[in-house]
Image (cartoon, rainbow, N blue to C red; front, side, top):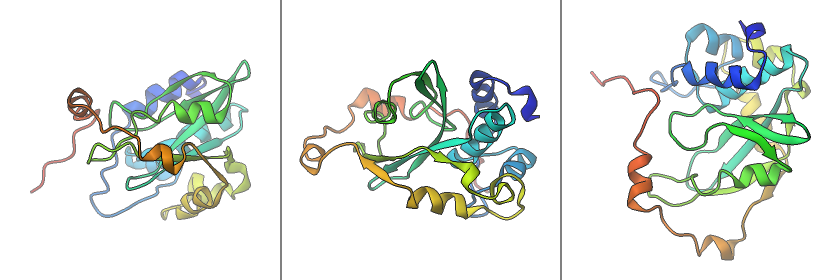
Length: 196
């Protein structure tokens, strides 16, 4: 399966088509094999699938952790073209998606997510980004093939060095999302299952 996904664009198209993991039975951090078998993924699960696909084709399996305050963190898969960074991203919303490889630094790439990274109270919440995290630092069994949730990946990302994007003084100046942005955020790629 992963051998067919030989470009970041093909990987992103595949990740977009994988249904959202709504964690109906509780929180998960599925390995690549489990996410592929169950045909569902959250951002970190999609990021690991994308990283594994890049790795199969000889590219490093790199993740970037975007850390938020009063919100969920987000994880993307990094790739480079002509010395510039891009990102593959699994999300169910119009925000926090794919980034073309045009960013000269990881900070520049992370800042491209800043404006659209908002919580349900319409506050801009992105505060820091990690160094590129190479999944080859972990045993492949722990994130590619294991049956149980691979929380070690999330913990390792949390423990990685993070760099601030804004100061506390700047955070106090942030404007809430406007009504049009709020409306756009209601769009979904995959609809959650109906409650019984």
